[in-house]
Length: 171
Image (tube, rainbow, N blue to C red; front, side, top):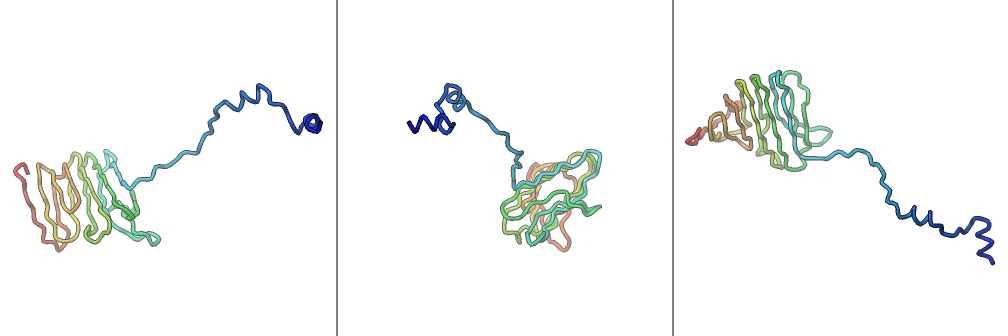
């Protein structure tokens, strides 16, 4: 009797076929866009603009940060916190590019792997601080201190370095 009273006042309802069917339908809800975080720093130079930048380490609000900085304007082109190993890929333009490694990789607690492709043009790479061994593995190709390079015609050691150049048979 009490159940009939509750049903009459809408407190209890008999399950209808429609309610049961509605519960079985899967419903999807849209989510906000997500940003995939990565410890990779990738920069592609504009084709008709000569690339001239330095890769350096700076303290940003108390956080050690790897920054790619435009040498002409001083603006930061890209940055990553140095809280884990980082892969850096720089693709130069079709003009005469210049890329400077402006830090000592031996003083960094995490591995920084840099790949620089100079593209076409007469490109220059200035190596990291400290005495380094440049390994030249082929025409305009090689590595130095955690930096691999290709399509780079000119190599420079940092100031006050005693760098060595080792040429492979193909270099």
